[in-house]
Amino acid sequence: MKTASRIFTAVILVFLFAPIAILVVFSFNDAKSLSVFSGFSFRWYRELMIDSSTLESVRNTLILALAATGISTVMGTAAAVGINRLRNKWIKNTINMVTDIPMTNPDIITGISLMLMFVFFGRLFGRADSLSFTTILISHVTFCLPYVILQVLPKLRQMDSSLPEAAQDLGCTPARAFFKVTIPEIMPGIITGAIMAFTMSLDDFVISYFTSGAGFQTLPVRIYNMTKKTVTPKMYALATIIFFVILTLLLISNLTDEDASEKRRTRKEQRKANKT
Amino acid sequence: MKKNGKPVWGLLGPYTVWAFIFIVVPLGFVAYYAFTDNSFSFTFDNITRFFTATSQSDGAEVKTYLLIFWRSLKLAFVSTVICLLAGYPMAYIMSRADSRKQKILMTLIMIPMWMNFLIRTYAWMTILQDTGILNGFLARLGLGRIHIIGTESAVVIGMVYDYLPYMILPIYSVMAKMDLRLIEAARDLGCNSYGVFRRVIFPLSMPGVLSGINMVLIPSVSTFYISQKLGNGKFFLIGDAIEGQYVANNLHFAAAMAFILMLILIVMMALIKRFTNGMAYGGDTE
Picture: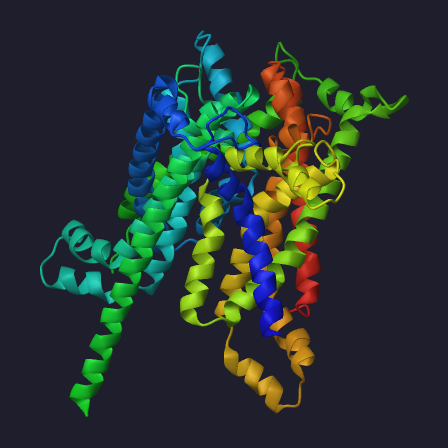
């Protein structure tokens, strides 16, 4: 049984990583081919560095993701606090149901529906090109919001609701109690929500494809346009860089995680030792 | 705490307005475009066109869009079943490993999800091509070449590859949280390993299976890139059809197809929920 599950795990991991391994290897290919390796070189990395439209799309993607994350984190956190305070079951359920829509709807429907609305109003105001940075930003904020709300809500439910009350009894204004007590308590949820929003925005292709105009290209849209023609290992070089950036970030976050839990454990043990 | 209406709406107001304008209203626009023509007067033409348009395929006349929808549902269903068959045991193995290994495995399964799916799909194209890496490998082993690119199997491989992590992770998270005392109790009461699995682990894992199925089925029904690359453009799926009409600036017909897709998905999700609730002994899946 042990060996069987080990083999099964290995098969799944090979399946998941085979294409990634191949694109890393062929990003160093000397020739233009993506299936015959003819020699090691950094040629495609050099070409990537001078490809200004790809570099610009990387910059666009980061600007968009940061803006969408900022807006959706602030609005989503406020919304979660509001939802948590709602007493009316009917209103609460309706808002939760609407929040679920962008998460359950396929991306293509979210993208098409927003695009139709933007085009409709664009035409109404007599603009030929109704899609722009504003429309793609609106779309990204829209699909990021539910992730923030769903990360913050559980933290609010776990929080002891007498804490902000105590702060107010001790002379805090409601606003001060909110920023001094509630926000620090729910911070882990806000941070996870913001990280999720950021990665969703970075990775999104379908919704960006339908809602961005010709003037603003994100990296996934740029990649899509690149794969319409013959692809060179340049795109693989780009993917390899992305892969190693992600890998480093994940390793760092895992290591710091382990450090934190290690510290917590030793603290607990110390406390136990003190008691006895 | 004093809860008058004002502070709640001060916080919730902006989101409520935003969600209404950018979530609810756009869905209304899908319906509006679906039932209007280019001059925005009411028509059923788009819907009728969907059900009646025909084209030639292998010398026979077929209903173009009904065929595309049927094919999408079929391939998405096959991919979901394969993801479940491969993902469920994987999730089970992960949940039984020690906590350090669990973490490593989870990170490994999540890494591909962070990579752009367009590039990964493209890499599969270079693997599966007739002169690709897989065939080169098989030829070197002295085995014959296989023709796989441009077939429905290639599209299924692409879908399984892209969405397998979405099946593994929800099942794993349910299994990792499972109360181990329940398994012990079942053992103490005389269950063998198979009985424990069938009567305890499997029913308890049903909520994870349900969200896994939803997370694989919905994107694979509506995908519009995989089939273009791995199916050599021969196997149009719903997503490709919608995208094609968008590119051709046929927004009303694109909206009609999106509208029909939405209805199908609502029905499908209701059916899945019913089915999996039944599997969990008709109990509450909370």
